[in-house]
Image (cartoon, rainbow, N blue to C red; front, top):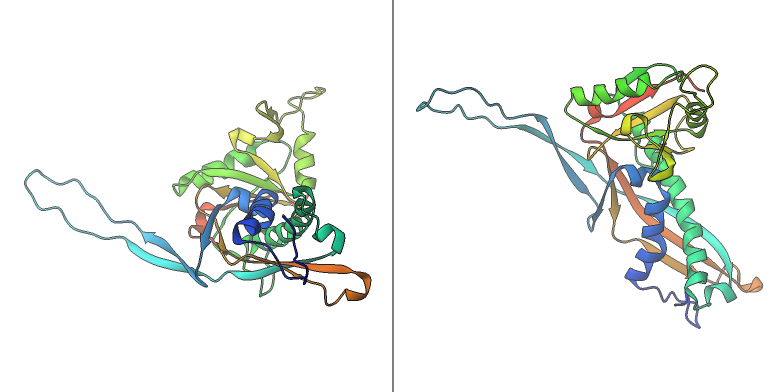
Length: 277
């Protein structure tokens, strides 16, 4: 498969774009790894939010059951465009080997994944979608990284609102501070043991710990299972042009995705504040 035809037009089919860009972005993005990823054909995606449950009650046999209904709202997600641009030689773009296409796709995917993570874990200005740092109702837990107690508190905080944490995400500096903790004084054994099935993965109290430089140092996010969403429009594209670099026989390869975030249960998200490590 080559990226371009003889006249410089793209030869990529939709399924090729998925393999070369969408799937690598999902693998590279921590935000997409710890959230539910939803694909949509629409410019807007509505996420239903239950603000108050229906009520049940003890009822004597033979008597009418009091009816009730849940109070609902919705969160409107409008995926915004995130784009990457790379410059490659015509020889590489026209190479029909899968490896050549993978080099180009992976490069663009890494760039887009970094942008997605920066927006998801931060509070960037539009047109980027609002991320975790913009939320007003997350549960805050304060503590120090001298033990794993703050992780137990975070797990309990999520359980108090009926949620289960599926992941922690930390800045590399905070992850290092955890990695060097020992199980007792004068010991060389780490307090935070690696998962034997995945030696590079750490899991405080059984919850996987992910690492991303997009997370602000001093904050570790507790992400509840099924309560954060990354919404991706299905119109992801890779386009090729030789116009701007005609004199050097190079090509511009542009990738565009449209991505938005939904946080339908903010109270289930936990921000562990450790004061920077």
